[in-house]
Image (cartoon, rainbow, N blue to C red; front, side):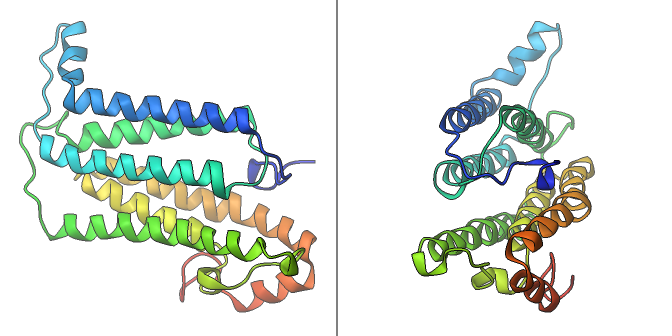
Amino acid sequence: MAQPGGVSRKHERSLLQKCVFAALHLICVLLSIWLLLGGGWVRVGAWFGLELTLADPQRGLLLLACTLLYFARHLLTLFYLLARKVAFPEVFGLGAFIAFFEIGFLLLGSGAFRQAAVPFSVLDGVALAMVVGGSFLNSWSELQRKWWKRDPAHHGQCYTGGLFASAMHINYFGDTVLFTGWALLTHNLAALAVPAFMAVSFVVFHIPALDAYLSRRYGPQFDAYAARTHKFIPFVY
């Protein structure tokens, strides 16, 4: 039988897989630091006989901070929040996706493909607020659910409180907000393809599959929750 949303919902520690996933992400973070602060982008150009520079290193530092924030949240998710099984195909697939957008965002925003720095503006303040706010929505909602489920009195019950009272998949919405802000910080329209892809993936693929699984698991309790609660965006959808 196909797994809901393309992942296993079976509870399992999967410690080896999680450690490999964390190591792959750490390599990506270190590579980002090398490219921005260690002269890596210039050296890559030298390997191919090109003169490559980063025209906007200050913006690059802000994007690197986003990378470090996301890495910290990823570790929290892997080793504290995530109770389900993690398989190696998921590790390598998502690991490649993380490398693609983290390094891609860094290079786009650091001016690897433009000639001059982009001055910071109100848009950057809004984008940074989206990064922080989206991170909060995702991680805090997951923490609320984790702590609630830890109570033996709640065993076998569907969590519908906290931030999940405003939207059934507020954690997915938080990630969409985070990545939209992160993409905006690059000041490159191409970067917006990443949060757009994520939003479509959540709405079309992950959410329907997860809802079907939760309906089977919790029955009328989940169905009543689904009937009264917005699915993805609070107060909207």
